[in-house]
Image (cartoon, rainbow, N blue to C red; front, side):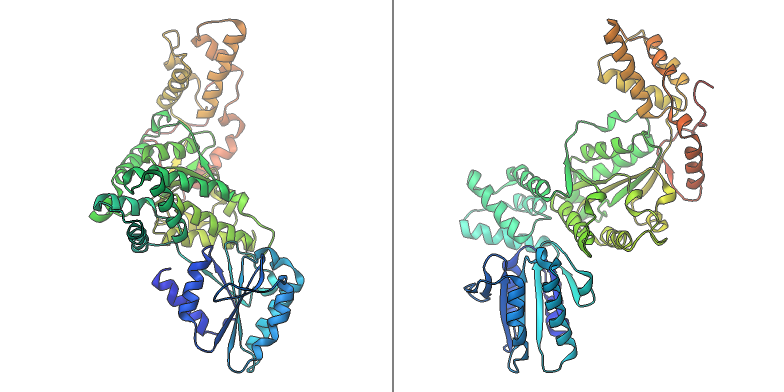
Length: 508
């Protein structure tokens, strides 16, 4: 536990804070700090759902109660003139929706605040945050940050001494970097497993550490670890965006050296623009280019039905992304999560947005955010200010040269590119088509050739598929023009250096 966190915990213990909710999964870590901070007049009593009431010092079971029975039994002990009662509740979030438990906790909190002869504090320690609306005004929420570099070094030193293993200076720093984002408990577990695997600790353990981090992500159910084959070469066009990402990739490839040199760690990018024009592909290609895992955050999975549950899920998701750092965190269609903030959209979405912005500004981990959005008008203005992201890019419909490249990529990927295909003719004809439209034309032509028994894909066959297709510029013409109009209000770089074309379909 960091020094600043220890001071914060101490201040909460000294203050008139009736219920402290510590969002943390390492109970031993919190117990050790509470023991250190305990005053002579404090009396601790503990509860967990498995054993009921426990002696805090030796964890000896005192009574097999449920939570309501326990609170009812110990409540009056707050009238003790010699000792302040500290009630420690562990992993009781599932019980926080029990009306009787809520009523008892509220009663304890009210007596603590209103009566001079009553001294009691409740400390809830849980990995999930569930705060009933009836207790919002009485609860102070405290997050425990993940270990910083110095704490990770201490963990490695302590483990190395215990198992009597020597670690080279370079290998030691690589381990520190790889273990970022894990809790102290998880670090000890991973080090133990790595050591048991080969009897040493060195750079070769980095792959194993990453696989263990992936397990944390999979078990969460909130984030998704993406597996794919796309690279930056699979993107047709968008040369400015690709050039910018290539510069950042050079920093990620030598992150330790870059940080020591004084380079700021790349924070993230917001890619706005037309659907089907390569935004999602850019997110996947960024991960490949940076040679780090890609984690996808579906904001819809964060929404909970209880007060504080959605915000707790957001905190947990962001912490989990830090667990796998360095990584790319992809948030697709981010406008759907934070649309209309400040305009009556809802308190939960507003709080989620506020927490996300705070994390973006204060995060110390190497989590590179790739946020993608189709509709800029639905994004809160605060999201588009300079400094939120390293850069904002607008992805427009592909130009003629870009369409040629996109068609070439899709045909070559399927092994169908040949000298009977005139890419120049096709790229001129397909004006107003996006990348997804062009891929659809290629796929349809190949399917037709297979059904008809045709061996070779030709320009004529592709043009036939083109004639039967409708482009996005036809289907969403008004929406595209409105989006371009909205973009003029903001200083957003075009992802392509080529002049954009009108939204007219190539058939007109």
